[in-house]
Length: 375
Image: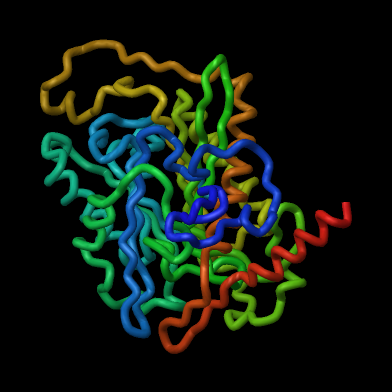
């Protein structure tokens, strides 16, 4: 990273939003990424081939690949349901899920779902002996990618799951975000985190987004309405904000499942800070999990397999009256994650010559520099 802060650049040296002088509130973790949450691992498979393959897969392990059998508390929120995230019926029923999350394109959700099953059979066979309800989510990359062709294979998904790691992660046109667009610019994968002090312990809240939403005219960053100022070079036109956004929120703070749902709802406020009004044609689906109670939830599969005697599970949680700083952390991290997805990008041309321009970083930096000097 050439000696630069991971808050400024990605591991490969791509700029992040803070490098443009965009001000954000809150205190980020060391990597300013969802992987600041202890145990979280992220992996990508990026598929860029010929003139029409612009897609991929993102894998997120809430407790790391080795912790798939230990369920996390979880909650789901749908801001707009024109999208898909599998497994959420069980999350609503049990308040938990086990195993990894995969995010890909709209027509590859079934393949990603099957790949998680195959990964569990290979790496956690006892978990697979009971039943699996994988979490696989999507956004639509058909503007740049030949989405109807079988480019995302089970092996591509397995590679992302197998190669996941902690530490700093890439952003922009990588993984499931490879072919995505955001506010009429090249979008994709973005992440950010915030630290929250509570009761003598520092907890982390991290957000990962697959950003593929919004109309150019809506774009706002750090309260500055940029859409009209950057209205030129908009080959996508104004598609009404269609496309979708998946957000994954993770924390090591102990939370009840209903509190996880409340965290997921706050993603909406973070997205709102970037300007979107939530298009009817956008699937805006958010999942939050807490890894803060390891071993607290007896896996249902263990009961089915006769390996668990009757007992009482126990869970600790942040009292509801003290939860506001965690809400703030979600909102701040979501806003910055979207900005990072936009900034860490270059122009991309794909299917049928369709082009998605990158956010003009120099112009954005100049706008914020001028505002800072005017104060």
